[in-house]
Image (cartoon, rainbow, N blue to C red; front, side, top):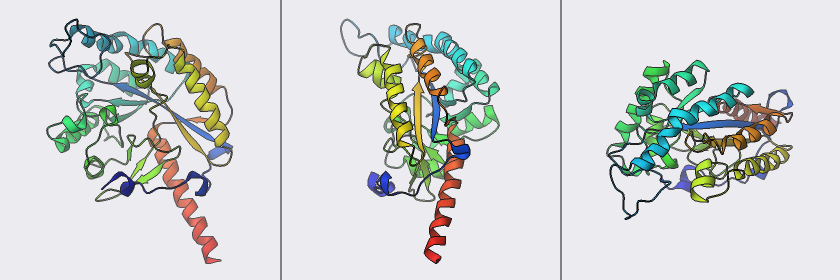
Length: 301
């Protein structure tokens, strides 16, 4: 299926009103990406280019740059989550659970939601057997947490033409790769629908820091600006905002304060719910069902 066949066009202004419990208006979820980078393959991202160019192996400077995030940056960020009692979603490579078990343990102890993020940090188009990769990722999360993941975020948001179908067949219920809306929407597959939960490319530290090369403070500025606009939009119908962080990026000493200050601003506003992906999924499915009931009731009258 082509993208517009999986998610038909729907103007947000023409949809039934979505309401949140307790009179809240905006949902915010925070996704922490934890990855394992294979030193025997080209690095997924680079901070330094080698003097002679190319993709040397081993690429020690860039591997170590990422490794710092898992050794130090994650733990620096964790203090922010603990301070604000933030629920979080851990998008983790299946292989990273064993490679960085203390990180996975810290997330599990805090009740974070685990979602699939590929078995290793590699484009899904470059995975030799996508079905096996999804299965291995699912099995690794289930073995560690005691339950299968409900959500999926492709490495770098990558998918093949078959990814949504394979995810549905493996029991996944929501996906984050389709960044095209401020509300959850249905995704058609060969078997049963998935739900696309709003993720973000623009309030994503990879885009800001590594691709657009902004100063560290851009993270706070952009997050607050996006939050304020979505908060205003949500006066008429609930919206969803995502914040995305990687330990090797926002966990760096010169950047952490801007993540902390963005969180401080967001949590100070009334009518904001900090939820996990599965909480957003369950709310949306319930709200969608209620809206359909109201519509059928009006039609019956």
